[in-house]
Amino acid sequence: MMELGHWFPYIPPHTGPLREMERSKAREVSDDMIAMRDDRIGELTRLLEYNGIKITLDETGVRLAAEWIKREVEEDPSNLGEPRPYWAAITFDLYIFMNEVLRSINPGLKWGFYTGRKTSLVYQHPVLINLMRTKQGGPLEYFVFLQGFTRAHAAGIGYREELIWYAFQRARELIDQ
Image 1 (cartoon, rainbow, N blue to C red):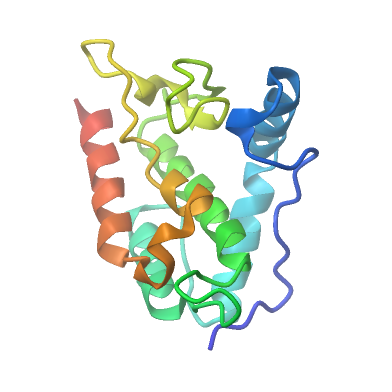
Image 2: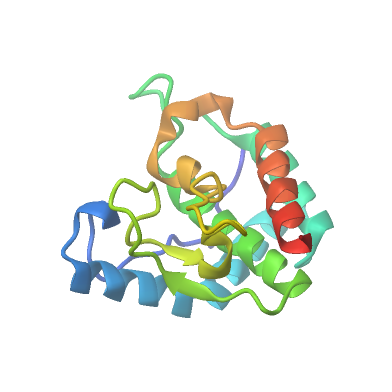
């Protein structure tokens, strides 16, 4: 069983779905998330180290973190089919970590506040804004690789290392284009 050690979750200045917040509050949360990214990576690193996994800010670190999630995610006994509530916060930390690994590969990638289509899964979320459009200019909604984990726990116990790795590799292909 995973141990949380001294890990603590990100606590946003406003709560609720970012897509549904008034824009000024959503932007404040998004800006705060972006500003806290080094702290969140530090928290994820400490959490994994507490559980015997040493990660670095590179593709190997992503693979190790993904394998760890696959092995450790736990079902919430009070809400069968869903992970324990802290997994949403842990996957947010992993989302930040993975994006920062992509930025280390391509320093031209920039964080931003997405205000494109309101139907987008990442509407009013922090994203690597350069990757939100393909060369044809269409929205790249697929590329919220861990957003699905952080906003919809539908995967529950089905968090899969392969899915996380596939999403990361797809993102890597996009920045290599």
